[in-house]
Image (tube, rainbow, N blue to C red; front, side):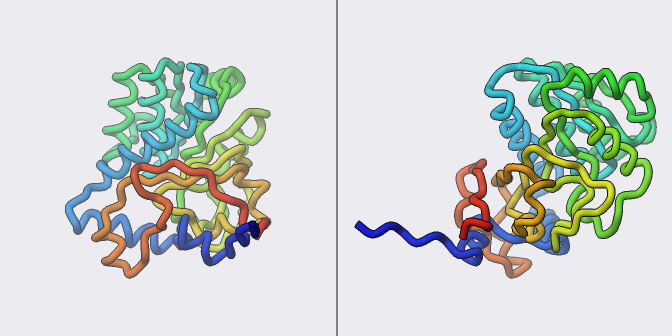
Length: 255
């Protein structure tokens, strides 16, 4: 029996996706136009991130920190924090933005997380940050998302440096904070992740082999992006991401 031939990069991208930064933004807009809100997608995204974190914890409750930025990436992190707390983890959300300045969906998810056992702190509390990171079995990186086009600015840059200063396992949400989602450029500073759980589909910048040291293991999660949104932007949905899949992504360097 002959062995099956390894998949080409094009075949892998058809299975798992290769979205550019502008595709991600267009998909979100198209989803809203089709009647699926950002808060709906964010809830599923955060649940999938929590599933990925729970797997890294080998199904055992532990101390977890979530570093939260201003955007949707931070909202995903707060949703994940709530689910992990529900599953028995002791969770601290370290917010880059002062708590009193949180607004919109982030305010909603922060309040929900706090009401369900997540401790909210700010990155401007150095003692709280050190204690949380030093005692955590896992840290979730929800600082910056796929819209980043240049080197991170303060206060996000300081949060990234604080996270990197600790020898701890890191799960990056969607893409490591400090990386360009389209071309894979690694800015300074950039989170060094143990694993990246990317959402909806693989990002184009995650495929280059040179980014592996930054992304760690790559996993991709179905978050229920409606077919109408894919059709609206003229991009085929990844064939492997159906049925709520959370999948490891084969290395493109092997093919």
